[in-house]
Image (tube, rainbow, N blue to C red; front, side):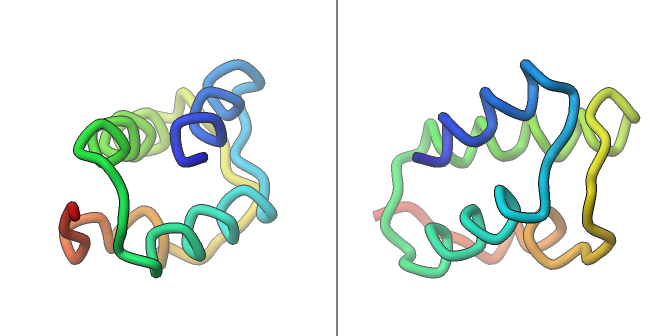
Length: 71
């Protein structure tokens, strides 16, 4: 699910508030694959570089990347 949400953001150039919320929920379950974290890191870099625009203003999901561990 993480990679699908991120792929959508790259296709549209936008990360919706809803997608950020879903990312947060999935990450909160703390059970995901290393590929998911790599995709999230790519998303974070794209947002920081301005390649993807965010609807929301909260940095919670993207900036908390380092607090998650893989199963």
